[in-house]
Length: 252
Image (cartoon, rainbow, N blue to C red; front, side, top):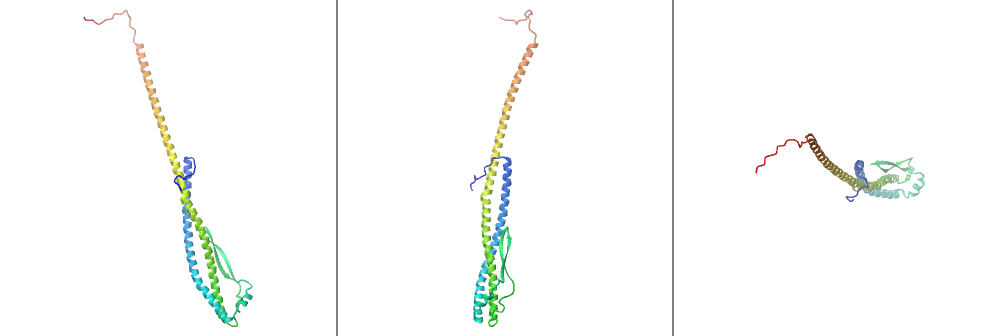
C-alpha cells in the first residue's frame, strides 16, 4: 500500500482517539490471527506426516490383503457367492465427530462393528483358517482406509482454513494497520499545524495589543503633560503694565 493511503476523516482530537483505539484493535486481531495461523499450520504438518505414514503402511496392507485373498481362494475355493448371500446388513459402520482446532471444525471418522459375525461358518468345509486370516487382514485394511479418509478430509479443511487465515493476516498487516497509521499521522500533523497557526495568531494578537497599549500610553502621557502645562499657566499671576520693571543696562 502507498504511504499516502488513509481514511478520509476530519482531523480532530476525538477522531485521533478513535483511530488509536481502532489501530490497537487491529493489532490485537492481527496477533490472534497470527497465533491461529501458527496453530493450524502445526496441525496441518502433523496431519500431512500421518497421511504419508498411513499411505506407506497402506501399500503393505493392501499387498497382504490381496495375498491372503489369493490364499483363501486357493484353500476354500470361490467364496464370492457365500459372502454375497450373507451380506444382508452392514456390520462395519462409520461414525464422525467434530474436533475443534483453533476455531476450525475438523471431521474425524471412526469405524465400529455392530452385530454378530455373519461369516463365522464361511470356509467351514475347507480353508477356514485362511478365510479367517483374509477377513482379519481386510478388516485391518478397512480401518486404515477410514483413518486415511479422516486425515485427508482434515487435510483439505486445514488447507482452506490456513489460506483464509493467512489472507486475513496479510490484509490486516499490509492494508488495515498501515491505513490506520497513515490516518493517525495525518491527523497529528493537521492538529500540530492548527496549533502552530493558533499560536502564531495569538502571538500576532498580543503584539498588536502591545502596540495599541503603547500608543494609548504615549497619548495618555502627552495629554497628562499638556494638562500639567495648562495648569501651570493658570497658576501664575498676570503682570501689570503699571508695575516698575527693571530693564537690563545697555552698554554702548
